[in-house]
Image (cartoon, rainbow, N blue to C red; front, side):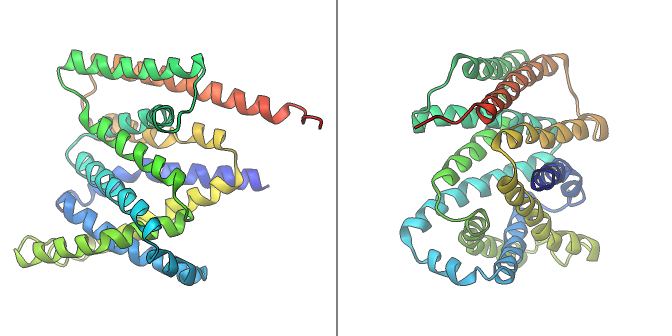
Length: 299
């Protein structure tokens, strides 16, 4: 029962993230930096509310004044803030397909970062998908004549963010709340400056737009809480396979709904990445199954 519920939570979280472009497209007239500022503010309010409901406020308050904890989350906040901005800007600038590429290659980037920074050792089959994905990106760069920098920036910022969260001491809820606390003052300062300059969008583009801007906090928080609940109930190998739901939906939205161009060269490059992910996912799942059915060692 717990496994089935965990799978449902994970599917819901990744599907939610997959359909995110539809939401941000409704706010296409609002500058990306303002959207991120509001996303931070309203996410902060949502997350603080959840902490109070779950009676975690006192333990969270103590962590804010611990400098060792604070400096870890300062770097995490910068990375996730940059990732959020690039994602929202790219979606509304017509690069949904390229954002999907970023999240397709992100798991492989995370594996590579584990090798470089945590001295993790990979078997041959683990190197094959990384080389394949790198070949796909290289092919697109040479054939199109342009580095897919949006995809790489999204993949590396989220990859480094995940690496930092690996060593971060707080729970996912408290950690994300602390990150929004760190980003809160810069976000407020920027939005006040935008308002004083006469370019602020909030309260100036109609009630529906204002409602969507305020909703950004809840829209951000819900899938994160779903994911946190899923991670406690199902194996990481399942998470590793299910995480491709989001970029797949984004890719289909970009090509089928928003009619973004998808050339033959892009198809070849994406195909290399997709094959890499199939190899990576199947082998990860097989490794997990082998461990789960192997008999316990005798003392």
